[in-house]
Length: 546
Image 1 (cartoon, helix red, strand yellow):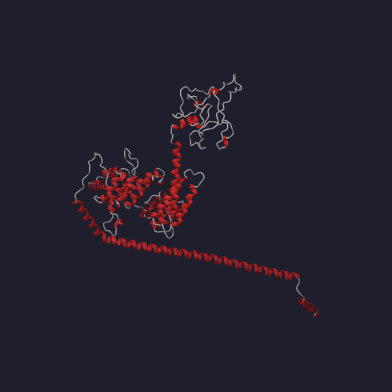
Image 2 (cartoon, one colour):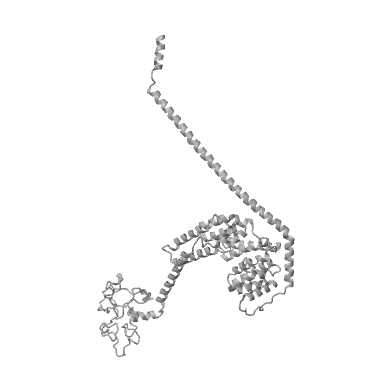
């Protein structure tokens, strides 16, 4: 028994085997992998929750900023509403006093009766005529007067606001004036074709007449009666229906779409459900000068950033600059980088190999950038010297090109005489029409007496030049290699007429007859162009057969 116990103790005291060591190391490796996996999982969870925290914080900051903006905007609007409420009685008193003043003031006289010939236009005549028509509430005559003076649009734009203030009901008068052509053209004879420009002009000019008499409020509260506002909404709905029937507002004519937006803004009939429609029209016709202001008037101030970003994406950086200025977003959309990007993109377009109007397009791009910089007073940040110099170079190149083209085509019918008189090649069909067939000029200095022998192409041996003694000698200097649409250069070598060669039978019953004349071989003709130095008879230019 004691011996068994001693053996067991000796077995326990013996060193472990290789299997036990291997198992121990395997267990350690599993534990190490588990620890590494837990560490990676912890790092991933930490990064994930950190990202969530940062996102939540960013969204919270954005919401707080938007809340501050909304609160500020709401506070301003509440203040404006309170100010309007307090100013109602004063505004009504001012409006009544203005009407009394208009009623007591004498009406201006018309310069002419209907049917008389119009007098020479002047600013005084335009002002008096507009004032008389507005005081008499004659919308049809008012529109006709504006259309007649369409060439004096600057004077009309200056005189219309004051004239429209003489109307008893400016809103109704303006809608009556444009109702014949807006929202749809109802004229039996559409001449002139498009009068949307007149609608825009009248609708813009009536805004001061509709403004609140209180100078602190002004156009922010248009004085439009409820009946006139309902009528304006009906006209806007009719325009939208007509535009949809024609394929959508994007396919409308720019003046028509502009007239629609101006109509909505003038009479303050913008609808919240139509804001997406207004945005589409603004983006489609963003290049029009009044679009940024109209976008804000129509309540798109919250969409201005999206509009500007979309314009930049579409490559309309100049329009984006105008919208950024109007919306006060210059910190986010700096104008100078946008202008440089526009020039780079334009250069890629007009430098394309398939662009045939590169000069014209580059000039247009340069002029647009220069005007944008001048309008927004950016000369200090965006110098224009290089652009103006490049524009002058392009204009000079265009002028030189026109001069070259005019010099090439200045001869007119004389170019036909040059072919036969300046030593150039002449088509056989035209050579037989001349009496002397020598190519000699018909000027008095080279004319000869009637005793000179007349030579015909049909007899090669009889070719004699006038006063030279040699057949077809061309002693004038050779012309330039570029013909410019005229006859080829004069040749110094004489024509060599080969003898008539018989035409072989090509399978018909009888051979073709030899032609009545032979084509000359242009021997020794070397003008520097490889194609003409081969002493072969080239084909006549296609211009001979036109």
